[in-house]
Image 1 (cartoon, rainbow, N blue to C red):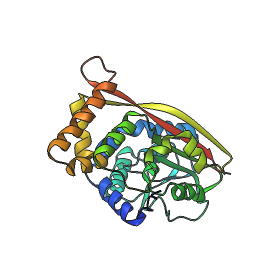
Image 2: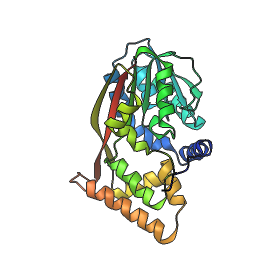
Image 3: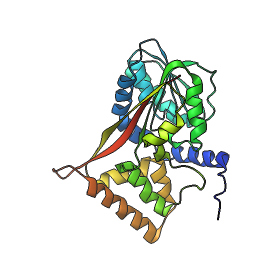
Image 4: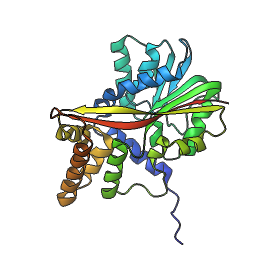
Length: 271
């Protein structure tokens, strides 16, 4: 029986970092702002509490927390995304601190934060157990950990599966979509006092399926890199498959695109 060799996580993380630095994730991330607001309301922390946003991207959860009076630190391993988060905070008249950091090796003491958040960020860490351990480590006992992740059967989950048929995912690494599976999340946080999960829908709204895919090809790192790695018939086939997916799931009736994508919102109370 063949055994899948362990992944070279250092090399993989370097590749992931380059992927998320490609395109301009902020163009996509800003449209997801409502998910950061919804998460912060669900966590229900108090003004003045210390909040960490892990794999913050362009700062959706960090900004939402700052608007609610929290003392916020945003981390990501792509410095350019943190620069955008700081610019957005300045425009909104709120303050956040930022620090370049790997979600699997957070540069903070144990129990440094009252609340730890991540919106569609920590789900992409290659070592899921280590990432979950770090979220728990930096959160104080009795504090809360809140995060969102696309579910395996969601619109974005299906997009990743289609891309994976053209560009093989790294061997020996669990799918990031498992962070959107209740049973897997329960495994990662089984030692904690309580866990609440809720499936919610985010609606992707674009002028058309073509507008959506052109935006994802240009600005969203994983699809940007996937299309850049293909040519000829494979490139055309991936394009057609993703356009087909978007059209199949489109719920708009006015000629535009309105596609729901289910995500799992999880709130863990640290034991």
